[in-house]
Image 1 (tube, rainbow, N blue to C red):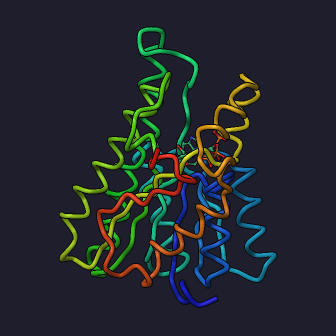
Image 2 (cartoon, rainbow, N blue to C red):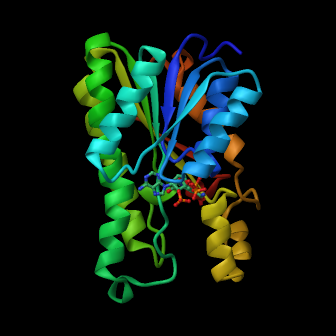
Length: 253
Ligand code: NAP
């Protein structure tokens, strides 16, 4: 419990999956954590799990599509814990993985971009406002392998995640000399509610995903969380603007 000792971290989308695992892993390494989500029940459960394990956490509700919500979430973190050292912009949705571009609804495109891309934009702005005067900070945006390569029948999601990788690279350059590192994580299929919802709609997806990954299995949220902790901590002090791939070999194919 040393990587994040005396540090303060926030995680969006912390009610579930990769966000919950990241919040718990950051707390296990000593961080005080703001677990934020649009889902109040799940977010409170994550914060409570951290407290029950002897850590420090608060839950703050936040819809990342709303700039006011995001600013209030960052302010609540700083009011409670006094500073912000690390932020994990993780909240996201899949939209649909079942429609080709011409079949997909414009409203679905708008929603996917509003959460996956503009949500990250809102979060980075509010987080940077806190980190710039302090002259230190680490931001980790959860993108996807779909931020680096195409994914069939998922044009909106793929566009949103490519944009998150671009946002990450550009912002990393803007703040490289200001003590703030900004990186992305690009997971392949990871066993979370998002993936299980897709499998429930189309059971064949389970085998398709496993076959696509050279290691022959899905990732786990805990495996992604290990990388989140590393990028949030000083152990990665010379890493910025990097899209870190965790994919069981998928992008190597
Ligand atoms: P998840 O289990 O569905 O968790 C996502 C969380 O974000 C949920 O609690 C969700 O709440 C919340 N959320 C949705 N819209 C929000 C909003 N507007 N504001 C705040 N929170 C919101 O999904 P996950 O698989 O852990 O995904 C986490 C991130 O990893 C996403 O950005 C996803 O694109 C990325 N990712 C996942 C995989 C994968 O295979 N699982 C692979 C690559 C990248 P509700 O449940 O109430 O919607």
